[in-house]
Image (cartoon, rainbow, N blue to C red):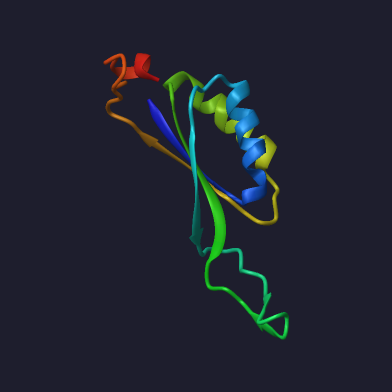
Length: 113
């Protein structure tokens, strides 16, 4: 099993959701994060628009999903095809999952997904 961590601009969440649904991945989790990287934050108006401020951190959405090993390459290709080329950036990380246990059914391994 593999865990995909996908860091994207908020507006791309629906695109990721559609790709994951079409690949029958089961569930996913997402939450709002902030960070900094190669893409620089744009100036924002504050104080009733009288001042400008450049934030240190950029708001993003992080999506996490655990998938079967045989789904990894095709899902990565679909995500890169759908999200690639976005000037606002993003990252996709893949890591191994040693165990998964469904607390409702007590199933273990890939059957827990």
